[in-house]
Image (cartoon, rainbow, N blue to C red):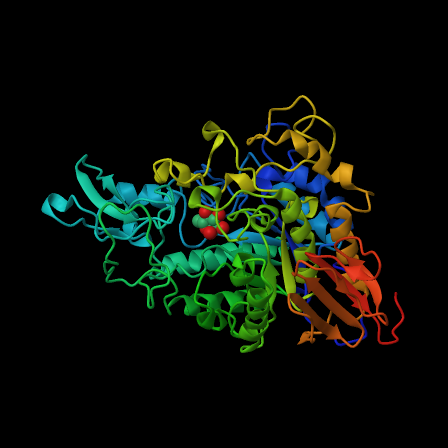
Length: 559
Ligand code: GLC
């Protein structure tokens, strides 16, 4: 079972300090040569993850799916898509990960199903007013003959959040709600049957040994049943009112009751089973999700969205520690995931702003972005609490911004009328080895990867970087090893230290400090502290710009 941390202190639950590695399964490793990642590929790479030093993996949806949204359109929550493998392989993978000391989190998608889920087919066939329709959000349209959608809500991927169906008798019929693609009908969480089925799904996977779930769109399940208009213009493609207080379909109070029940399900199992929420909510509302009888943790998206700017980051870090602490939950940190531009690219832009090129972001200086990504990794991994890594960040991969239009798969591309390219650029299959595409992503002679990889990734493969001391991979390996083995990292706190303008410095324990130099000038390091790790070379006792250092001292021995 999972490794224990090296400490004499009373053991904090594993998840409160865990480093969790996100596996976007389509793009991680392809075992059978069809150009798409799968369970066989993941199993073959478990030793790599163990060597990297992560505590757990979070696997994005691997269930049967028409893949209208990369698997976040689930047709059956109790099985595995044949593209990815079989249930037996999934069970073997879970056991193998555990044998290596790596825990396994799955992704559960409760806000919506696929339109190919049996429930949705039944709802279409059964017609208006039926019990089958009540599992989703069906409504009559407005206007003459119900030809207009029930309200003005917008899909997150662009366009209307409603699609009209044809009734079993062939007439134009009701509309159903989909806050994402039209292939992702929203479930009705007032339905007892929906609730009890999801509890059964959790048990299905807990019974198979999974250690927890990442909850997709955790803030979206409950809607204001009066479905009030938001006041969005008829021709708007996207809603730009996300910050609205008391939003009728985000962060409704009714979601909490659901998670209280889920917590009881998790606690009915031995071992520490956990939930992590993807909840895009106002920061002051986040603790509601993290109450002791609710979810264990939630992603800190403020950190992921922050510019590379010391004052902003200091504030974000303070809040990131303080906010969950209000309800006794640990902080968590994340720099990248499968929905956002990779941070090498973000940090290489003049304004380091969050956003994509087609949303007006500046051109990238990749060398600068890489330097900052190295510094950011050491900053994140020095903070108290847990951290989430997105596959490929340990290789220093960047957002692929020049994918050909015809290769794009993200539903946003079509739904925005080809104005927003979407999230494919961070989902390009990983390079593992060799000098020709697919760089070990799949077996030689197999199909090309589902998205094309840049030729330069020859020099970014895991094999190329392994053993190269200056590589991103070796930096992550060293950081994770020290984080596991050195005293100081398991304290739950952080204390800011006085530092020159443009430098963030903090103490994690009397023997462990971290400093990040955001200024344009080299910064002298204290003489009486030893250097544990740096994100870039230190010469003459000076910490260069855009570099992080971990320092040890206070008379403690180095392990
Ligand atoms: C979450 C996922 C994203 C998906 C969406 C709809 O935000 O992270 O990838 O498209 O939910 O399920």
